[in-house]
Length: 308
Image 1 (cartoon, rainbow, N blue to C red):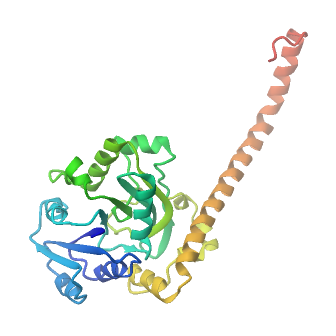
Image 2 (image 1 turned 45 degrees about the vertical axis):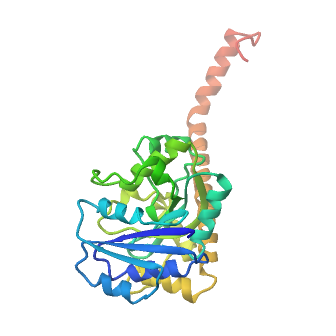
Image 3 (image 1 turned 90 degrees about the vertical axis):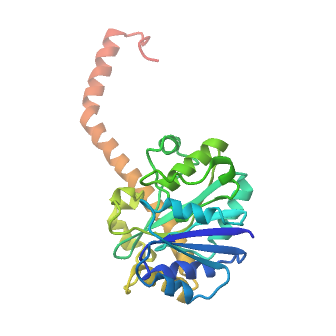
């Protein structure tokens, strides 16, 4: 078995099917999917049963404390795959997610890796994430201190033997059990794998804080009009709209990734323009003072020894 996948869920029968379909659409087919029901009281079990796939295992468990980390650990202990991947019940993987992330782990030699997230905001806006721990030392420091995390769990993959080396999720934590384990893994190895290509759509729930969204586009909404692929068409819900784009338009994923790159270019251009404007403003404001000070210094030091 190459991949073991965990999808914890609690009463999201309305969107769970799209997450499952995105697993079944993977180019890698050697996987097992554990769907862990954490005290579900809706028709989640019926949704899972409709797929009738022996690779899918449904664990209908009583509600666990907090976010149900105890129930998740029950699934982790039964996994057989070489790699462990996480998928939120309201998220969607692009079809090459498993293939690309496992390749990144193999190429980097790391035990833990993640891909660049795309945050799906309520209403259909897709925001490219900006959380590169591979090159941003300041972010990595805060990440390792447990103070900053901009990585959705659905973007993460790690080797299964990490459980033997670093333990399972801390069941006593009220939240951030995944984050806690990731820090332990990276601290133990000193390295990580980062895939700058988006492979996952992470939909932010209405109750989650918008401060968790790490995207430079948050401050530049006017640029979205130049990036049409970052807007989902209307639908019953955002997951349905996204899945329709993925399955009905063979070029949509390519367009999405190209526009993520284009968004970076536009944001860089905007930042350069802003810095240039500030520089010219300061130059106009302070250049008379600089000229006056240079004149006085030359009078005081006519031989120029003051100047380097």
